[in-house]
Image 1 (cartoon, rainbow, N blue to C red):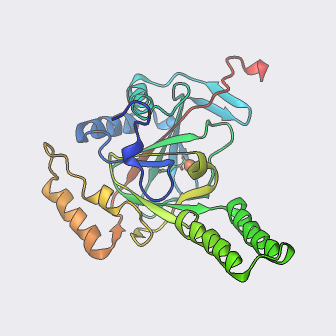
Image 2: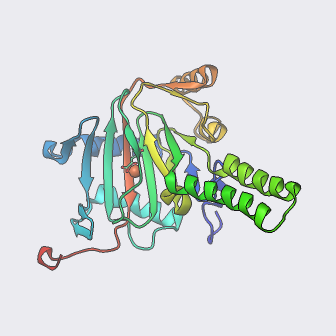
Length: 273
Ligand SMILES: O=C(O)CCC(=O)C(=O)O
Ligand SMILES: [Fe+2]
């Protein structure tokens, strides 16, 4: 990997600020993480309506983080994420662990304002498609551009052809860049996104046990990745073939994800909030 843009080779889809790294961790690292997660005190689990989660690193408030040290089993992985991505301005100090049963998901959302706008999501256990949807601000912006193009045609006496070209450009940019798309997240992969992919798109996971590959932009990166010294097990091979054949993922087991972020404003003292 090049030092200045270590993730350059891992972009998928048409946004330059979204990266998918297959097999970021090994199978044994995955098992160790799952072991730690499922051996954490029961009280660490918080039940939401449609999934469970563990919060590590402290409490995030609108104004910042009331910190709690991450345990060593988490810093081992967050330090590696930080070093290998080169995108976090300060150590990752907050990790949300989400657990999803096969029919559970997370509604389309944008991450809260307390976080630095880079997120790394490590997937464990099972695969899902994560949907990215451009949100209103972006759609309005392109609509404004279209109106502006129409306006400039009448005001400045531009020809019909000029307007058509501009409209075509706006439309194709919309088609290329600002359309909903999905990312297939395989177990042990790392998804990283920032900037536009972070702030102009909502991300979410459908709460259904079948996820279509129709809008997935990283099918080959996700399914055809082979480590030469670590070939797929026969079970994994079968699963991959099934996904390819049916152009969908049939979710049958639990997925656990680690959402790793930095909160820049850290409050050491509750009373200074
Ligand atoms: O589980 C995931 O992959 C996504 C989690 C997420 O978006 C979040 O915690 O903000
Ligand atoms: Fe999120």
